[in-house]
Image (cartoon, rainbow, N blue to C red):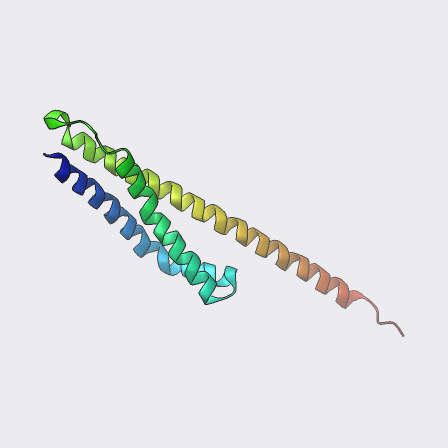
Amino acid sequence: MDQLSLFIIEVAISCIISFSLIYLIKPLLREILIESCGTTTRADFWVMFSLLMLVIAPLLLVIYFAPTQAGDAVNSILEIQDSLFRSLLGSGITLLVIAYVIWQAIKVDMQAATTMAVVSKAASELEPIK
């Protein structure tokens, strides 16, 4: 297999994985981000940013580590296997970063809600001044 065909297959693998993940995660990510960000405009920005990272990160790994050998010395099956690994690695790292950031935002929201509940309860238990 020539270098160009191999490169196109590697890029296609990366894009297929990325767009599959986008298809699965976009609706759920949007709902969580609307709740966390407060407005749909902010949430839509972060959804788009996250989806772009799901495409760019794996693609960068595939392109950066593409085989540089000339001629028929490249084993096509091994290169496609490596490309699949790099695509999944890039997608996995990106998903972990997105999950970590959302988890931190949820923890902050939960702490704020708990604090507000405690303050509200304490305020309701105070006796009115006569």
